[in-house]
Length: 219
Length: 200
Image 1: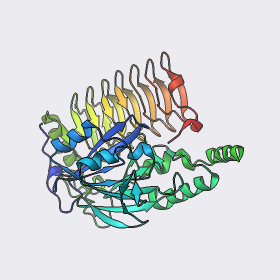
Image 2 (image 1 turned 90 degrees about the vertical axis):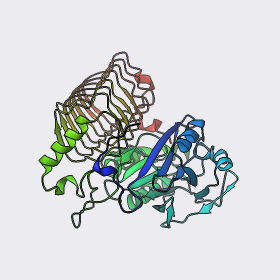
Image 3 (image 1 turned 45 degrees about the vertical axis):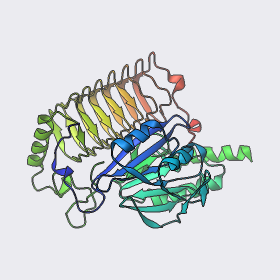
Image 4 (image 1 turned 180 degrees about the horizontal axis):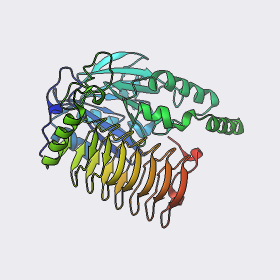
């Protein structure tokens, strides 16, 4: 495959320059699975293995990568269903807010914890509300937001308290990031921090009132 | 994915462009830089990967049938340009501007056009699956005969824009403003028009 040579493809100091990201749309829960590879080291990680299909396996092997890690944004089945399949093929460390996900033991991450994954700088940001274990991972300038935030909307919650908690967490930890940061959510298309600051409906006061009425109905 | 190196200008947090240590705002000669990059793009024929040319102004660029992956053109402007039949994967055109452009027959998946403006642009016969068009403003545009599955048009503003015979399944059209818009023959019942139907 021919690739246009441009100066941007030169090796850059630091691990951020040669990151490859593949996306996979899982029909199980219509979730996004991300495969992120470091071209310098050949190491890769997967974010939310809703599925671990043959296509993903082929993408890993054809790239000459080895999956060293899995980042779990939250322990909902349609984001982790492929985890055991993945672990049966690759000896990968699973990062999550829980000690165990789908029967797989995890390396527990805490809010604000910084760590290195496949030669890339990562940070775990706890943003509860959609679920108590929701983690947003910042890897270089990419934010894997799981079900907390997607293009134009925020994650569903079960109570007014959960909704407010989610909005607060997103405002403080996600939308406060640099405006050029890329958002790769658990569902739907990609976005950027600037786009979500401008267009996300989750922070619309009129819709928030409507949401409150819905919760009142259930109460 | 496009490189994440920041601009060499002290205090600037914007991303540096491909082929430079600086962002578009801090280029010494933006016109010459743009012309050189446009010539490179036009001369090549193969897939284009990991390119960041954000904030530049392109006129008369012909990229018909080209393939782009992991590229970024945020805030760039395109006039009298063609992406007809091009293939886009995980590309970012957020807050870009398209004026009198041909994007017909486009195959775009998992791309972000949020906040962009489109004037006199054709997307006819395109595969626009899983794309972010939130906050876009369109005027005299056509999306006719396109597949918009799972794409989002939250807070979009459409004027004299047609969506005739489109697949709108799982496409979000929330809080949009519409003036002279046609949805003829499109499956509008399968689009998401009510914020209460947004479930993740």
